[in-house]
Length: 422
Ligand code: PGA
Ligand code: ZN
Image 1 (cartoon, rainbow, N blue to C red):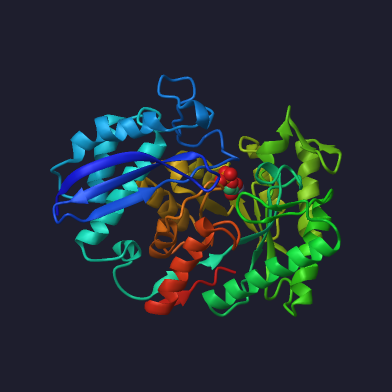
Image 2 (cartoon, rainbow, N blue to C red; image 1 turned 90 degrees about the horizontal axis):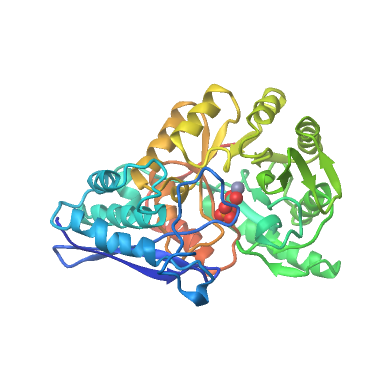
């Protein structure tokens, strides 16, 4: 099928901020639309998201965050290059790289390129009469990923109620995706009740739907979630383990890790020890960004002493970039990578990063952003790409449940297997 029209426009994300949507119309009159997410704890090495701040296109009521420049790039620069071509993700991504050869997509804007790339993937799936997940796994059972779900939020997502960004859970003892999800909903609900009883909940729902319960100490926050797991009759470390997103780049200031709520300051070497003791004392199976995005030596120093079964996960460290992943593989900095398509800017290149990670024996976690939309393409990609894990925030908010519900749809209607990465 051929591309008849490519059209970009501005929509809103779950934080009420502008983001980019793109539609591709095919010659059978079908329309394929995709909307892109946006982060708050954005890594310095991410592909460039174009915002209008300081440009003539800036819309004053959006505080510089409007995206009319990126939208114009779709309509003026990208559309003419694609109209009339056969719809195929690879070709569309290549055409955009020809227009803007910069590696970080700063010319067109990664929010423009990703919207078009996703719309192209959806259009190609349609032209083959497949779902987006089946475009990548045409045959055999679909692999439903293990959910990594936010219970407590802090950092940049919840007004720093916690020094770290998230305390999450991994229900690795569950036998099915729906069982896993039911455990998580119960843990989150109980955490809300127990938090309220203790008079703790001050900032109820954070950007990703987690509970903004204030804790001065990270250990106390972990123990609180563990107590909820136990109260439900689930076994910590056996049924459900903790996963932390430290997002430490956010508090790495002048070469030191500054825990504001705990009123403590650590050198990188001291922070390696701090992380090591946290992992010893709590049933944590995954830790994300324990060290800052350019503090490579702390990453490899800790990796050398970390327990073998621990998932050491790079988000801001890798920013879904092939060169940064390669460095991490060479330096043995981590053993897992967060895969965020909008850190990369193109669907086909994001898939390549995921495949290189799998080849190197890394685990992969396909991830949403803190600013999301009701679009559910992420669930199709995680499933079709056999990522084994998915992280989309909490179980609250339609922009989050859209992803869970898509996975539940697969489980109900397709032949599936539930990933067991731990
Ligand atoms: P972000 O956070 O989308 O605000 O960058 C998500 C994460 O750090 O995993
Ligand atoms: Zn993160």
